[in-house]
Image (cartoon, rainbow, N blue to C red; front, side):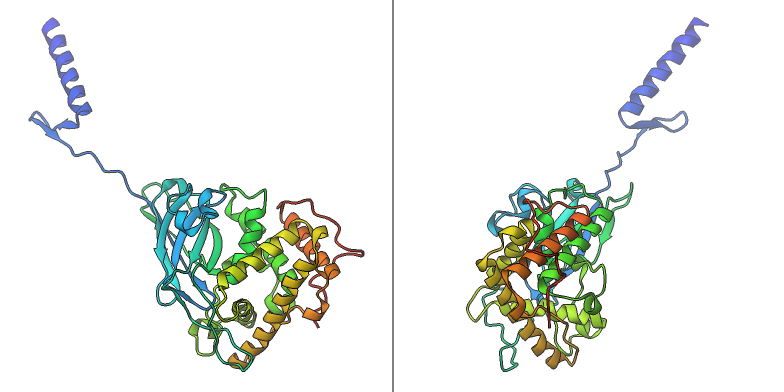
Length: 364
């Protein structure tokens, strides 16, 4: 009996030892080594396009929101905290970016698409005579958008995150969203959608766009527009509302005159709108000058674009109605839209000018 117990104990000990070292017994034979299973590498495949016409050969960077990466200078992005991937747009302005950094899974991602010295743009900007004119400088021009990265399920190797599209309109919208003090890297997809629609409504108000033209609850961070020119397959396939938004997006390219940098002009408009929304009561003549110029350029460009594409031009801000009071009112309306969407645009707000806000002011 003692001998049997001793043999049993020894057998159990050896079996346990082989199990710990990756060995198994097959019947009464010798132990067989079992290779350990490699961990599954998971990734998120982000897909989208950059449109101001199509931005070709531009650098695409993915950053976790509210990190140094999302605001870093282009030369510092790769080494910044929150950087999770990069790629380049193709000849159609489209991109595919793989994120394998698990710290990005389930987080809010800002996609920054930045033109370099060799990038080009499918031109949809016109001069006064109706000729295509993209003689501005493109290097450094940045388009941004935002989305929530999904979390791959256990055993799932790759998850798609499609339609993460950037445009001039999404860039201005994201500028407002990034200033939202309630936005964090952990904001949910549903919460982000609400914030994006609220910020988009604010941008539409400043630009004088009407729901009757572009629809209600539009999210400018999810616009797939195409270059606004006749014959462009993506543009032709758009709804009437989509074509009107595409023409407004294209019109913002007219902000830069020959030799001027388009990126600087778009950034100037985005930061001006953000500042006005943060503190409507501080709107002054300098802000009015910028907003009036935007209204003038956009109205002229959408008129040219509608003629070239045989489409109906959207209603946009009438530059003659742009004053300190109307911009204050519009900024206050935009601010209130963001607050109603659960956001906090920063600043101290204000009541605007006398009387209530007037969505978009007069656009006639």
